[in-house]
Amino acid sequence: MDAISTVTIRRARREDVGMIVKMLADDPLGSARERIEEPLPASYFRAFERLEEDPNIQLMVAEGRDGVVIGCLQLCILPGLSSQGASRGLLEDVRVAAHCRSRGIGESLVQWAVAEARGRGCRLVELLTHHTRVDAQRFYKRLGFQPSHVGMTLRF
Amino acid sequence: MDAISTVTIRRARREDVGMIVKMLADDPLGSARERIEEPLPASYFRAFERLEEDPNIQLMVAEGRDGVVIGCLQLCILPGLSSQGASRGLLEDVRVAAHCRSRGIGESLVQWAVAEARGRGCRLVELLTHHTRVDAQRFYKRLGFQPSHVGMTLRF
Image 1 (cartoon, rainbow over the protein chains, first blue to last red):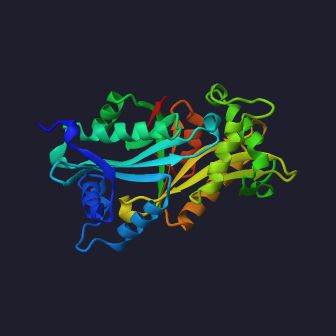
Image 2 (cartoon, rainbow over the protein chains, first blue to last red):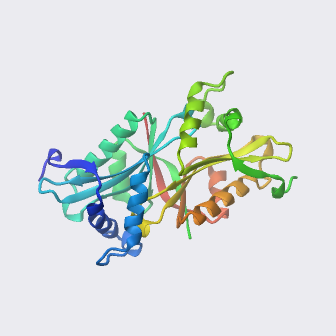
Image 3 (tube, each protein chain N blue to C red):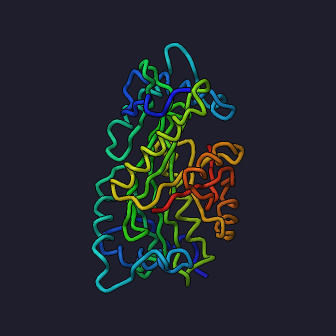
């Protein structure tokens, strides 16, 4: 079992997009939504460019000692008036490669994001997790998150 | 009862900040989090400046025929890799002044945001609403939102 310290958390680069999309797709919900093809649909790379241009968004990856990407997380820092004008941190697309789970990699990613959000003046970090993801809810509760809200979605 | 058509939805301006904060505070959850003082704490205006600088965030107000601000909503367009690189729309801080509820103002604001998100390539609009806000949940369900997710928060 690898220790947490063997993982490097860094900004995602263009060459990581394929590995990130693979992790997003390797999941009962994600498999229906993604398109894993060779080459990868251009829409993923266009989205990566939009992410890179936004100073309030950081797409991060966890890289193992061998340089392979085994986890990802997107942190958005959202300014807003509520809570006396404190920004909010929003976590999205938190994934760990199936063969690397239960090693603390997800925890490292989330702890990085919480520290980053605090450092950028947030007083709240929030996320939506599908109601069927009970393991994820247990994981976030262990890290101090409360299931205080209902996450509502409209797809079209 | 005013018809929906008498409401104008427009970008918030600096002079609207006081009225928006009043609406955020006029609520069992918000009252503990906001500071209504004369003058309003500078942190609110600094947050407004950060909002204005972010091209992916729109803080909108609903203005009655008399020019008074009676509702607000913040829409964030969030690029991301998932769902084949489609951006997501996030709704935050949706409020209608207490004396103007049940007139379709909230619906006008949310419908504006959904149309804007679609127009900017989103395939999903999401939001978190506190589990105690059962009226809000009923309102969003009526507009087609599903309570598909758990909204988890970490405050510090």
